[in-house]
Amino acid sequence: MVDMKKDVNSNPGEPTEEEFVIRTSRKKLGELLILKELISRSDLDKALEIQQRNGGRLGDILVRERMVSVEDLMLALGVQSNVTWIDLKTKKIDSSVLLFVPEDLARKSIVIPVEILEDTLILAMAFPDDVRTIRDISIRTGRKVQPVLSSAEDINNAIDLYYHAGKELEESVGQMAPVMSTKEEITSEVISETPIAQALDLILKQAVKDRASDIHIEPQNSRVRIRFRIDGILHDIYSLPLSVHSPLLSRIKILSEMNIAEQRRSQDGQMSVRVENKNIDIRVATMLTSHGERVALRILDKTLSPLSLEDVGFLPEQLERYKKALKSPFGTVLVGGPTGSGKTTTLYASLNQFDRKSLNIITIEDPVEYEFEDVNQTQINNKAGITFATGLRTILRHDPDVVLVGEIRDKETAQIATQASLTGRLVLATIHANDAISILFRLVDLGIEPYLISPTLAAALAQRMVRRVCPYCKTSVKPSAAEDAVFIKELGESPKMVSFGKGCNMCTNTGFRGRVALQELMVMSENLRHAVLNNASSDEVKAIATKEGMLTMQRDGILKAKMGITTVSEVMRTAYSFY
Image 1 (tube, rainbow, N blue to C red):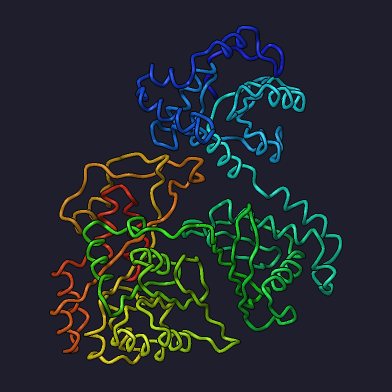
Image 2: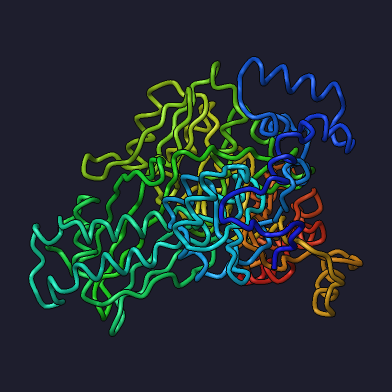
């Protein structure tokens, strides 16, 4: 329950005379923050100068300029307005309470209902002195309204979390269910009907809200299962009637320019949609199963800025070694790992290290996931005969300094990339390999001779993704006996405390929010080049690389667990699975 600091309004939505006096005679926010020693006089003067020049709310300016934290600002605003502050990051809200305030009103007024206390609705508000909104919701609900204070960001995040599209989706499905059965022919008229289009829009909207990277639509014996991959883990989200499958699949095929009549062969496509004022590209793949075609949708949010190398997950010493490899005037830098291991993200972050004004940087990708200023990006098109190999061959005729290849997947592409690096270009590329040492032997498998690998390979980086401990509910505990054993094995000692997430609204009670890469970086040296030329075994190469500073992926992960970035169980689940 919310800790109440004053009595509930005797008249719904109307402030009492005492409240009115408090609100009109209260101390100004800036003076209150100075009194609480949260900011200095010079900080306030600077913020007021910015406000006078650009406009805006003083509190927003103070937070944006990092003069005060959001939490301290909320506490000060609570004191100023005589309203209790509530932390929505940790507050659990029962779904039944949401029925009192529809989502459109909650978003418009930046409010969210928190709980019911007897005949009073506790309402989190970004602007608790908005008497009109309080009165309107009181009339709508027939209850007294007690405002509590929260930040606009926390309220919007809570709205995204709790107002799920499930009810709207059920309504859309309900409208179309009587129209057809699974045995009826799918016509263009049925496909273009509003209910199925709305249903797909709701699924996509919810996926973007939930930070999903993939959507899986899977027909089962008696239902259609829809799952989202969030932070690398699949979650069941919806269970829909089987009758929805055919029109939903047809709608997706039309938008992604697939053959709607083809059901037996796998197809690949792409579509662009606008969700929540964002331009989203979606890669689509279909495959026939025993219960019908399943669909996988990979979400590519082009509004997201590529990360810096610091954000990807490099430990400081490894980061310096990788940056040094990127300064090579020629050669290849290869990033290995399975699908979804963040290889492309790392390469995009690597592009940010180059002077794009003075260098000619050209990419060949499948597809172009993020767009860069001053970088020439091209996309493969199999129908037009543009493959990685043919595209790379064309790029080399355009005098590039740096070339990014989306993936080296065949002998021809590997040979052209190697020749490009021999002729003075720096080539960045991804390749499927389990660890850094395996990248060397993968090149050999693709037909590249050791005498060509030795002088051209600058660095080999392998990585996996693990979930980050949620920063909003992170807490410290003593490591378990099993964790102690892992720490001692990898590091020779165990920390006194380790971090884990208790679960909160910001991480949908999983204890994890976002992901970080575990990395294994091998930077080529004279000793390693000599070993490659002499056809050394993988164990011999690994021994040399480790002696020269390469951290194994397991050790990198355990160090990050010790630092509180992730957990031992995440590292064990991901980095130890292939050893």
